[in-house]
Structure formats: structure tokens, C-alpha cells
Length: 459
Image (cartoon, rainbow, N blue to C red; front, side, top):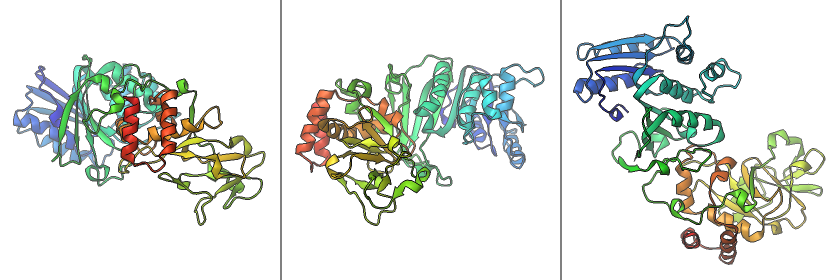
């Protein structure tokens, strides 16, 4: 992280380290100053650490550099969010903070309630976000002077999804992304933490023109297999993307999906919608049945689907196979038909992040309605089934390696959300129908054959 900072023309460095812990990141920055890689006439550090048990260790870390570089260190035991907001709003009762030239941070990770004091404080300075880590980054960026540099290690959850859209807008309006580093292995780089999503190191420069972005990847924190490439910013944030998803390619091979001119259709263009399965089983426990019976609808879970195979009802299944039809449940059911479904939960270690299957109504000869559990995403047409060829064409397209590579570039957590699926671009109705006809004729096609067919159709 410290190596990402460039030499500055400024003779003075004002370094911000919010959530400093025992000072590891500041020490790494100062090591570069001691070695002469970064040269300043004077260095001032503001290190925020609210845990008073860590503050003495933090102060010792920073003071150990005094014999080597001229460093003036201040350890602040106040709440960083409250202090930063007061400084940015010119609170007369708060000692002002300087404009920093550099910021380095490993911020805390914790969700904030919409009615919390922190959320209210952040709104006073135009920051709308849902997690402490993004709040720390936004405030640190707001406290930087123009051409100031910020390096942070944070979860990738901000790269996509509606909740972080205001945060993405905030940083992209004020800074250029100049470098992003991705760790391939969640369980090696952060083995001491139970990390459920990927983490990245990101470098921002405030008030400078956005140009190309350096993207580097390594398996873990040894960086033994580090490789990097500079790519156009238009491949990081697509120019016409209203959600402003941030893409971090995990490989440097050009994905056919980013090149194919035929992938222009949105789901709305196709007349198709995707929704999260509406049945939350623990809320409807009294209506669930282990095995189907009369006056019950099939209830489908991800466990009913395995690759291209489908089994319902499943004996000895730990989940129910059916849901009783009554006035409390029928509004959550879909008419029997062809549907494409995608599992909502997967991790980057799995062979495929997006796993799509087709629901064939022939599997339910006695049923008129179907229930979809909340861990499935369902493609439908106004809550009715899809045309048969369209259902098979969508599943084939969603299961391709190219789409998997593309999806991994902006999704680093364990969920495949309906919002993410809406964000994708798809082949036209005609091409999906053609693909579906082929998929139906080749039910046992290998994944490589499907990839080649999709590539040929969308070329």
C-alpha cells in the first residue's frame, strides 16, 4: 500500500491515518520516507484510534521514527466520523483539521443503520453510505487537498449494487482511480479474519483528471505472482452505465463479452424481468410441506438443481418440497411455465459464480402453480413463464465462461443479486431464441461446446 504513493512536489506531507490501530500503515509510509523513496522536508501525521488500549502502542510506533525523519505525530482518540464532519462543516466548537496531502487507511467494517448518529452526521456533508469503511474513505477523500493521494484496503462490495451507488458517485466526482489491486484468494491474504468477500487495495487522487487505471492481481499477500496491466478507464466504469459499477478484471484476457457488439439488449428490451424468489421459508413455516400433496404447489430451492439435472420432489431433502395453497400463500406463487433460475449465493472459489438452470413445467404434471424460494433469482415475463427457447437460451448464455469472467470483474461478494443480473447486457431475442433451440437439441453439450456456440452466435 505504501509503495503506491508517488513522490510529491510538495515539501511538506500531512498524512491522515484513520483507524490507525498500532500504526502499521503509517510505519510503512514512514519506512519509504526513511529509505529516501519519498522525500519531504517535514512530515505531520494525524492518526485516529478510538481504542484507548491501542493508543500507547500507536504513539510508540510513530515516535520510533523521530531519529530518522522529521515527523510530528498526533494521536487522536476521538471518533473519526464526528471529528471529520465537524471539521468539514466549520464547527466553531471543534478544532479544525488540516487539508491532508496523503491518506492511508484500513478502515473498520460495520454496517450503519439509516437512523444512526453516524448516518445523520455524514448526510450533513453530502455523504450517503451504509458502511463504516465507505464512510471513512469518503471523509478521508473530502479532507484531502487537490492532488492529494489516498490508498485504502477495503471490501469490494462498493463496486456494485444500489446501496453503494451514492458512494461511487461521491468518489468518482472528486477523484481519479489510478490503481486497484485484487487478491485472488480470500482465505490466504486475510487468513486471520473471516472474510466473506474479496478485498481490494485502491488508490485515489483527488481533483485530477481521470486517465487509465493500473490493475494488479496476486494470489495472496506474498505477492509472489504479482502481475499488472494498465487499462482504459472505460473498461473500469462503462461510459453509459447509469449504476456506475466499478469493474476489476481478475484476468487480463479480453473477455468476448466486452467485445461483442451484439450484446446490447437489456432485460427490459427483451421484455423479461428478474426477481428474487418471493418465498422466505422461515416466515411461512406453517405452510410448508416436506412432500407434495393435493392443494399444494411445488416449492423450488437451489438444492433441487444440480448442474444440468433437476430433481423434484427430493426424498430425504432437508428442505420442504411443497407449500400449501391458501389465501396467505397464493399471491407469492407463479403460474406453471418455463423459467430460468439462478442461484443467489456463490463464492469466488466455486467453478462458476453464475449457475443458471431451466424450470421445465413437464416436471410438475399435476401442478398449476410454482413456488420459488428466496435463494433463487427468477427470470420471468410479468410473473409468468418465458417462451421455451428463450428460457434455454438465457440459461446457456448465463452459464458461459465469458460471462463468469465478466461477472467476477464487478462482483466480489457471495451474492448474485437480481440487480447484478439486470445490469448485464444480453443478446437479442432472436439470438437467444436461436441459442435456446440449439441448447434443446444438445442437452448433454459440454461447457466448452456451449461457450463456443455462444461465442459464434454473439460474434
